[in-house]
Length: 218
Image 1 (spheres, rainbow, N blue to C red):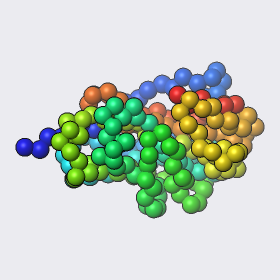
Image 2: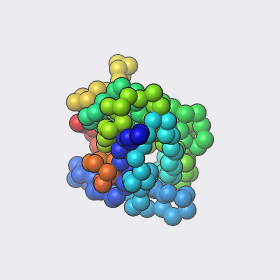
Image 3: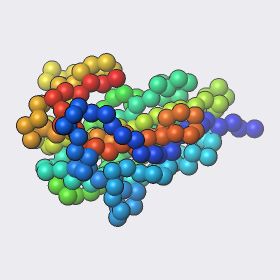
């Protein structure tokens, strides 16, 4: 009998705590169908009742609309404690794409490259696809694991350069402070977090636009 891995992905609305005066949530729109827009999703990205078995692969999609004042670039990052090391051991493979572009492999706590070659213009929307695959060669031990994940999707004004860029060329690490430009109207990161958190019950999707002097990674 094959036993499955639990990959939670229920989505509920969550409030972001940000510096006072730094929150302008109306500058990013989120939609499941590309028609009805809001600041969050209230339904699962993946069916939380399904148990994954080796060889399973599923793709879920949502739409992100740039409601800010300028063109933006989009990146995505996986955030997970990975307690059962399903990501570290490559039992679960995650990738994403936007606007039917090339698939980009995702690594835990590593910001991806841009998902689109072109800037997402003001008022434009793109579909983001997230694919998860459970390696068919995974061991029995991995098949009883649980994976709590969140996907951080970030829009940043194109004028600010590649989102997550470090002046010295180094990628930010957990615990580092990322020095975004002070709020001058040109560098304005906006980000959402979605995915699963907890056994198979709770997930989050958060949509906001932040105007901050710096961003602290936890």
